[in-house]
Image (tube, rainbow, N blue to C red; front, top):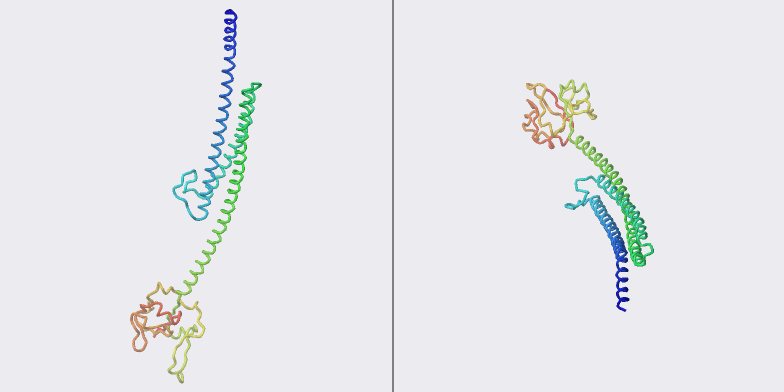
Length: 300
């Protein structure tokens, strides 16, 4: 009996010695399956983080397009990038995101095959494989959701491009309208500030039909007045805001104004006969030119 017990014990020890390599192999395989799961989980988490980053960048670009700059935000799209550069960076990220997702899918399939090969006919590993398959199914669900988010990101980028095109068109239109308004304003300002004057002898001005004579009897006592129709080409044009003084051709001669300017707006009033010497010095530009933008001065 003692001999039988010793033989059975020896047989048990031999069986244990034979099963030890199998147990070690199984443990190594289980550890490999666990490592595969951890690796795939990291891929899924990294992809989810990448999607979150792209969503953040899209939100920042949308905020900028709405005219509300966001300051102090981290990320690849710094505040000094133009909208075009921002969208290009987003497109690059979405492209990288798509490639990463495709690579994850390929790794998922390859990893599933490796785990299946590890399991073989081992009952314990088959149970591990079932658990692993459940994990893969969950990962696939997450990846399908990520694909949907990528498609949405692409739609948002397309929308931003469309909005940018419209913004550019609106900007061109606004610039054009602003230019037109500015040109019209400048034109009106120039017209309002442009005045005309002519200085000449009575005979010269009569000959050029700038003045006419009225009143008097028998050729005596006639007055000189502006003609009904005046041609701006016969006058010298100036900007009244930049011309406070009009010199006379001959400083020794006397001159008389025959148009309806306000003589009280001059620094030196004409004498009792309405004559001026030395030139016109205007102290009130608007007042002087208010009644007429044409000034006719006759040399006496």
